[in-house]
Length: 509
Image (cartoon, rainbow, N blue to C red; front, side):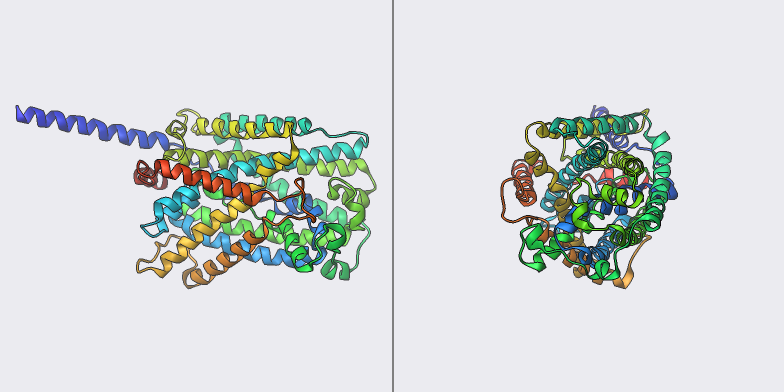
């Protein structure tokens, strides 16, 4: 009798193990569809650094001026390279969709790892949701500016912008849900080619046709911030002007959120992260020089809702040509949205696997091999946030202001945990990509740079401060952190931490 009971218990335990194993497989069954070339082209297009410079000229001519863009960019580029190299070492050991919060859990001291991971997970997730809204809004703004160039009497309404964002989401979600494995690698390969070829097309057109500014304007030119933005302190104005450069490097961690769909991920993902920042940095800095030599009078360009269109119009003398070139940037923006939705949904999927979001979001469609529930959930959140734009553009900007500062906070936490680990008695594990003895100096530089930028990101760009021009990034980040802490108080006893079985299968499958 005892033998029968023992056999029955063993059978039940075996079934439970099998069910648990099947559960793990169901949660990690995405397909590795990207080779190294496709993945590199995807990531350089997603960052779109030179396109970001072209789309954010207003900020640097509002605070700082040409010298801030030329020399400040080099500072930002060096900092971004240090960030990418630091995170690449972690990706080489653990290339997994959760990225920074997984690395925080792996590296943090035992007594804080669960709490730090919990906060990191929520800050990173909210930042990616905000980034999705921001990218959609930025592309919609380009479309609006092109329409205004051709139809000066057109007046943009808030609901126009919202519908444009919805149209982008409908198109890009369709690709993500139904044709991800078959189409996205090739779409983004074509996008990478477009990203590089447009760089040469824009640069050659401007250099050949536009009237030129002198070298003094390009390398030493300044704006009087007291007259443009109201900031009378030149040091503050210069640092606020850095934001144009900072925005061009945000989101390079998109590579890691898709790492479970990349072949030979421990080798491919870290190298792609570093090379993406390197190649995009070179292209963006060269494009900065082209823009500054060809911009003409910046104050005239600032009269347009999108100053880059004024630069193109000044060079070509044709609204049609400027429209065509601007439309290429809109197309790149839509292609960027495809990757953004993929990365955001994989982060949602991963956070659900680890208990942050509802478990129902953690499963992968067995036929399409994509986390369809996570895609639909993430996009539903984005669509709900865009409804804010029907009532108030200020309220809409409140949430979109979260993305950059939350990304920088998430980078800072992960790199800080790496420094703690290097100083401990147990050195961090080493993957196929490593900085060796340069690791600690690079980590420390990345920390100092990241902290410095975090200080300036919440500053208002305009004085005096009003409700319309106030920078809401720090209050909204504070709200996210407080909400995460509140959830932690409720969940801290029931949430054990990250699932080691899922990590093992995700990395080694």
